Amino acid sequence: MYIVGAILLSGVAACFDVYTRKIPNWLTLGGLLILWGFLIWEQGVGSVIWPHVMSLAMGCVVGVGFFYLGFMGGGDGKLLMLVSSSVPFDRWLYLMLCIALAGGVQALLVLIFNQKRTTHKIPYGVAIFVGTLVYFAWVDWYFF
Image (cartoon, rainbow, N blue to C red; front, side, top):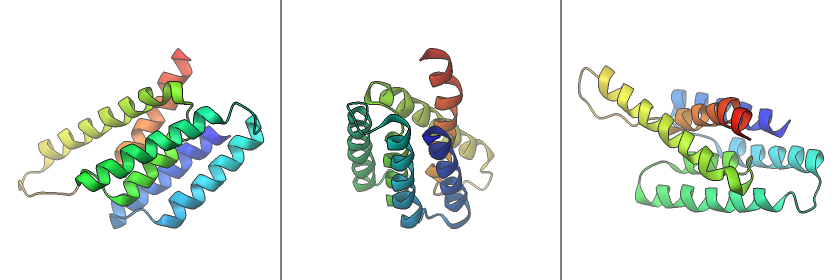
């Protein structure tokens, strides 16, 4: 259930990012509480939760780091934290790889189809959504 929640929340955040170029705080922080509620409901509070806490911490470090370097917005960083916490720590790097590849494809498509050659801010929430969807639909399903 928490996997479906992560996909749905990142999809809604991607829609906000495309149409308003902002991901609201109530969505990311409220979504994190909902996601963790489902996670604790399904798996309990025991030792299973700590790998997700470590993934949340790594998502926080990467999201805040990319925000301060100017690579992504604050809402994108918080969405990255939200999605990171949905996978255990030993699979976190696979999720980040899927998100990075989706972001690269998205940037390439913007370069190809941007005929005016003006600079655009790319809504990275879409790449986070697509990368999360690819991870759960393909990588997590077939390899783990």
